[in-house]
Image 1 (cartoon, helix red, strand yellow):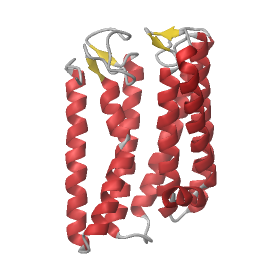
Image 2 (cartoon, one colour):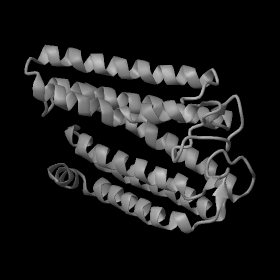
Image 3 (tube, one colour):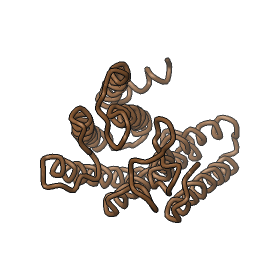
Length: 259
């Protein structure tokens, strides 16, 4: 409860936007068993539920972490941009789910294809804005938190940006599967391919460095008082995590399924 209160105190816009995403995910989850529409062989509600949950976690994380950026005017501008882009993306994903259409990898000349293109442009825009904000945070002169925790936030933000752009690679390929077509056997709910390499796995773990690395940095900072030693541990965790995600990238490019 203390963490949730801090999120709403730090950035109400991102906090409430995230809460709405969570509520929409719950409503779609209630409706899903009654939905008969399928996309690529799956209940069409599964994808919007996953994206609603992912964006909820993303917006609450950013609400908490961007509090430490000194230039809060930039953060406010970023929050408006982020909410606008994520609202557009979810609108497309949910709308397409209800009509049984593809929200991603839609290369047609129809409305679905146009919306997919616009979605891609907006995601690049907000990711570039995140990169700018990350650079500003990395080079700001003072921090209100211990240096080791600040370091973990810097790394988490940077890896998030890197693996967000990796999502664009899937758009270039017009598929997330390597070695076979989309829509065949996959893991429950996540739907990661169990037959072929699936780029979504590395993308998923890569963007969630935004949560994993700062969380590790927080606990390291709490346990280790010596700043230099705490920084070493943060770097160790970050390098291990980066190696793990890089392995997932190579695995998927070789056409090997995650599980």
